[in-house]
Image (tube, rainbow, N blue to C red):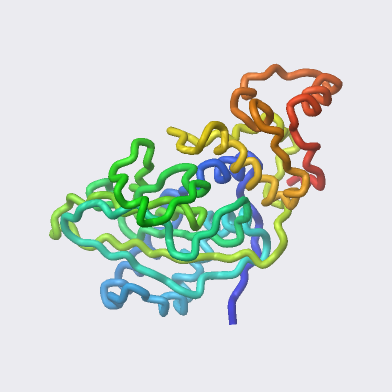
Length: 295
């Protein structure tokens, strides 16, 4: 039977927008050292590439799967009562290795929907020389057949997820990623990377930590770093995901050209309410997202 979990959200409107545009969320050193040590001990004697049995260990479930920082972020993006992982993968690596090819994991879908998340956990320190996972911000909206992705090699703007033990990073399942080059010698030990998924069980709605001052008309939907989408498509796709997560996708629309949410408008003035209404009509900003909740 699939287990679910309820907890309080930890992400704000601004955090959710950041995830929508970039496709990932990093929590450094979120897991306590004691849990990291127990995880490494467990993995030293359970060398399978799919150590799913670790999901039966209460200390692991409490310390990693239900880790408050991670679970709060998952709750913010997938809603209350999200389903817990049923499969665990471990990408082990030791000794020098060339970088992996860029890829999306099997079963990826494209669109504004966010019904599941892929999450990664480092039980040990992973400096750049240990071959951390590399992510391409904003690529969760870039469709490409995998056989046409492998040849790219190094892409300027990629983000290394190097971090201290206990780091967790949460991603849109279809984000482009790869293992970076590993230059550390075999004597440096095994790099473990545990990977697992959470699922949505409820309809999306805006029930994360709502900022009463948040205005979608002035939100920054531009991907951080280099932009790979055509024109302002990255802004449009990120805004559509935010509206979908808010349960308001039927209200979303893009007029085209330089209309909202194109980043050309990020430096606009702050008008009074009458001018703001005119701005919305002129530049195509959808109506206010309602059903706000103060926390």
